[in-house]
Image (cartoon, rainbow, N blue to C red; front, side):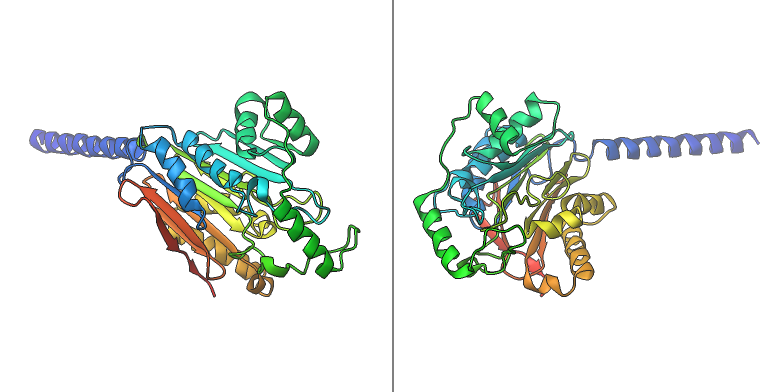
Length: 339
């Protein structure tokens, strides 16, 4: 009997030790260096240049939050980019309004929406996160805060964007009324598509395994004044959870907001889906809810888990995303799509 008791005791102790070891492994998984090293991903082809700026931070051991801020500033400053930043197409009344959000792995986040006259809304979003008790500032209040923080007031409507707006006015039979819907997108193409995608979303994991994300946009071309899409909405255009992963979106923001898209992607990863599977399921949620409307618009999701694994999926073909790490410096990949 003594031998049997000793055997059972030893077995139980061994099992307990294994369980504790497994728990310790689970608790520390993803909190150290990611399996593939530091990595940054972002939406669309202009994400390649943005990734290079972010990688300059990551390559020297910098924080993922600094990396996504630096990366997002590149398309914000690009005068050839008419869907992000200072050269963005205006709303139907001729005002360039910018939206941005930024989020760290611990849940810290900041955002601005309908911000005018400030060239880098992503920087203002980070100041909201770090220097106020709030998450989101909008319109005149966001501008007031930005000016108080020392950001210069600038005219954002470029001659090229102004000319494009005036041409749109001729063909859209514009009427300055609240119920005048924007239906003729002209040369901007499919709403949320490759010529009217209106967003850069960026996700990064640094050498220490810290995640962060950023999203910035000038919004949909010729939108109603005051319209805000998903980009500055935490949980819609961007969501980061250091224990699970991060996600961002692009395309028609209204559809993403209705489904809390980026939060949904992260929660699906929490339940065990890969980044690719989570993005696919989130896209299908939109398609199933609005099967008719979804055939005429684009929405895409991009995700990264805490191990640095990446996935993307979209409603329509044409959505691409850029990947940058120690092995791939300028990779541009097509996302799978429903149609």
